[in-house]
Length: 143
Image (cartoon, rainbow, N blue to C red):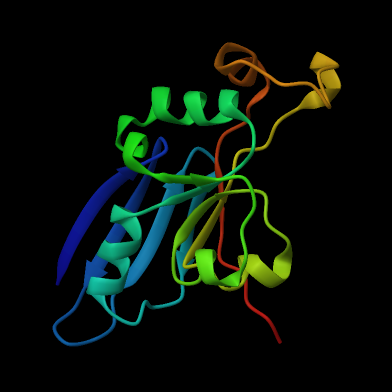
């Protein structure tokens, strides 16, 4: 068995590969860890990690993300997304459930607007840093 640890947005993604079995993915953060369903193959996971997608129209959030994870400087950034853009990818941003279920992983950066009074206004990276919570990673499935 091989285990890889990939830092991503201040979290650790632990990738376990056992011979020909599908790989498993554990996300470890400040609040504990989450085991995700086995991935189809390592190639899909490596591809998703190498091309994350940021869905936001807020430049301050993008700058904040890149300051904390310089690898995101090469991430694709779009203001709105559809199924074609998010399918099989690691997506950072706010998505409706029907799109989040198409992603490999959905990452939310929760923003606490109640303390800032800034809802509805454009924020700088410094303002985002003041109200941003730790990243939350989700794997959404439908029934």
